[in-house]
Image (cartoon, rainbow, N blue to C red; front, top):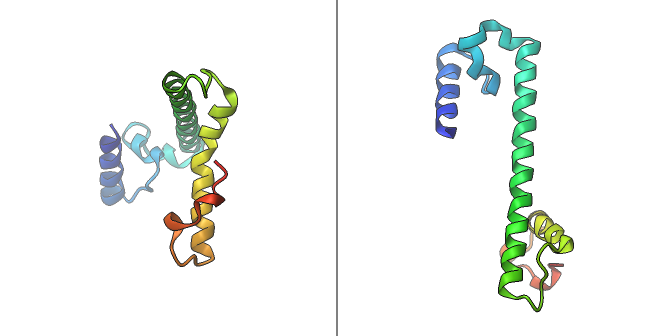
Length: 121
């Protein structure tokens, strides 16, 4: 499905000179109206639905990992522990922040070999 949208965007951008935006996929249907408020609405809907799907996937993944940890180590974790799910959601963001900081200050060993004691999780 993603390749179909990418192919359509590439063809329309190359042949018609249209922008690489989701509104361009609707050019064959609505024509030059993609450059008005209707095109803006299409782009807004595409961005909002993409954001909502990413958030939903992240939340479901945290619940799944929490359930797996509770099944594997019931003496340490409870199923449905909200604090653990929040930690599981924010750990990738904290790791990315740590990598960005170590790269920006010029850490000699790179982000992957930075001190693991700095990782709060």
